Image (tube, rainbow, N blue to C red; front, side, top):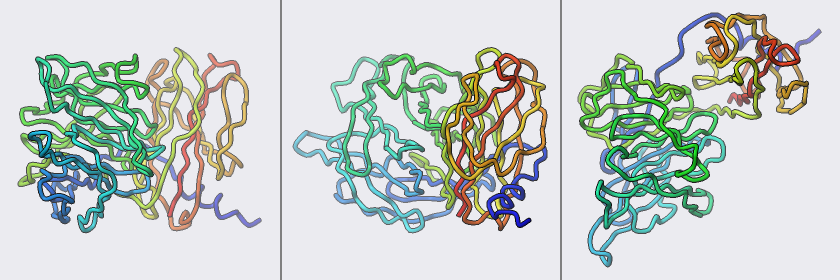
Length: 399
């Protein structure tokens, strides 16, 4: 019997064994109007090019962010002064190979404070610092969402202003959750996307990990590697950030001689991935999750991360070629079809509810070129009436 190409690619993709998560990326940093490429593994920085501003009085490209379609965007900072002389900021689309910028939308007379792009809908989220009068503890910080297709802007409210709050960098995770760095105490916060004063805006935890915040810290999401990185400007050192606990872990790499950059954007990847659907809860009310770290291109090493399960229980990965939502009981949905492959069972590490994890490496083979795969995890959990629980789905489009 001839094996379908998609099934063969899935089988080749998943030659599974234990390994550590990936933590390397090639990020884009900006200094003034000049772009640099930062390798977080080698600790090097390379000149890319420079953006030519629309108005010669613009101060700099203050923030950069990577969209799901791999396009790079930058926000320029307005020239602050008397109202009649204020130079407005702009949103640019930037060629990450040459630095050539194309102006798209005028931001008006604003001073951008941070920027990140939603991984699912491609919307630009950015904060704005009030140009005055400021409160007793500095400028108010307001959040906005921009539709990059038409420039339409939606206000999302103003962060709490006070001595203990100084929200700076923004970052998303692959599931579309938004995070902010509180520069006052170097802590990670979740951000309520319905409005920043909502219940979803709360402290997750302190970065810790020896992060030197004396000259500021930049938070950046990198979707190809699945990581949220932190960059300490004082000693030009790199950290990965756990968005569940807020804890930072040093990568052991510094970028000696790097310019004093103002912001970072994630690395590019020819492949795409999308988290979709939802898992169902098991013991302790925990819902297991499945994420993929790494750029899913031919020849690349990626990691499949199963988390939040019941420790010590068997688990499998289910692989198909299409997204579906088929109820299977217990509040669970099957999210992949047809079932091209179910992997051999592996055991989740950890003990207890919500602590079951597994990190599974996979090599993307030549046979996977041009294939779309859908993945979902399942693990044993007698708390659920069907005897197991399932994760969200992940769609991988391999170029």
